[in-house]
Length: 397
Image (cartoon, rainbow, N blue to C red):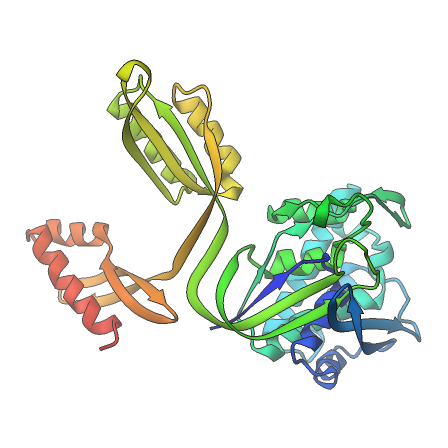
């Protein structure tokens, strides 16, 4: 499974993503060949090796001419892509990016999507950035894309709407739609300007997962931004290679609180509610509090997207006056659920994979329980038999 991780060192823009793809091994001829399938004239791609800070990489420019500056809307871009000879996957992903951009712009301006004016985003370079990025990932054979947190940037930026805060409202809306992690500018600099453009945000929030995978790295590419900064190298880094099957997931939270006045039934109810919410795990630990009072520590692991909801649930459903929250680093094996045919019928089985290989299997309890009841057999007997059949069918000898 070939995957890529994008490190937004100096932010993210469409040109920086294209530059990183070129620097990673996508030839400009191949990229132009894919973009020519759009049958849209009025632009030229130029690449230049350059340096930002101590990093050397590729600065890619999309230069417009012959009508390339003519304003278009999202429906125009989508129509051009759908009428092209690009692969079905590139068409689908490119249109998904444009639809996400349209939703963000519509939300910011409070207008229907079809009536939203794109201003700076309405020229042909937006089409080239989006489709070029999607096509470049396909040329590299990237199946999964991951991304680091976005730097927020700082200060203001001038637009056709006037002076805007950084990040621009459309970019901020894209962050919010994807619940993307955002961190302060490098070194907490206060004059970075815009670090993530709406186009860069749309591409990455649509295509990427905000985790860092475990990769056997084959190549690293550096896409350079236009500005030179004294605070950080204005570059986007693309790492790609074979994914080993274990994801290094830094976007988790550990929520804990101590409880000394709740019954077992109440604690069990809270546990069920947290699992229903989407918690990865919930458990109880016997502890002692002041004056040697016996008590219970409630612990829950949740994705950062669920942090606020999980905290609110614990505060409402328990007697606690406060909770502890910590960022959690967690390795996760790749997992999948498959259905197999057994002597008892169809059974769902969980498969754990490391480095692409199935290393263990576990029958789904509810399926085993159903079979045991329906066929009046001991639960352990059914579980052992299904386990053996699953291992024979799914594990490599």
